Amino acid sequence: MLLVVFGASGRTGRQVVAQAIERGHGVTAFVRGASRFDAPMAARVVEGDARDPAAVEEAVRGAEAVISVLALMSPDDEPQHSDATRTIVEGAERLGVRRVVVTANNDVFGDREVMGEFAAHAREHRRNRTRLQASGLDWTIGAAPWVTDDPATGWYEAVVDAMAPGKRLPAGNFATFTLDALERDEWIGHLVGVSQPPS
Image 1: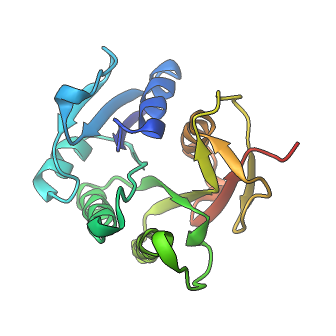
Image 2: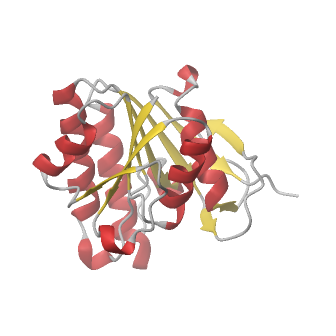
């Protein structure tokens, strides 16, 4: 499969790219700064701003699926994250790329008010949810609790339309989920809670 990974230079994104190549997929890694991204030799790299329709279309053209592990880096950057997701979804729609997997945190479930430093992140994930639900694409949102730098174990617990029971998830396991989601038709059109099962 030919994949585009948005947010490829981040903690989870790097592992999505590496694991996708290990699985035999063709990968385009979309990054904001190519000079700071040590790309695997097998990956095609596109540099740009994910809010730029022309850059997004250059990356998405010819792809069969899109994975976005973009995140809001700072509350002050709101609504950059949802603006980027909207541009990616619109680009996929124009180019006929139907399968889209997007990551989020658990605040994407429901609309309970979130206060404090994570309020902006919750709003952004919920905007992404609304945009995907309105798109008509074959989308899946993977929602995790606290994503950590713990060593990947290769396994996770997934719950459809509800938060998974664990409180942590290694970034490598979240990456594994995004790639598995491309092969799980029963997850299309659903939010899927993902976590490291509690011991």
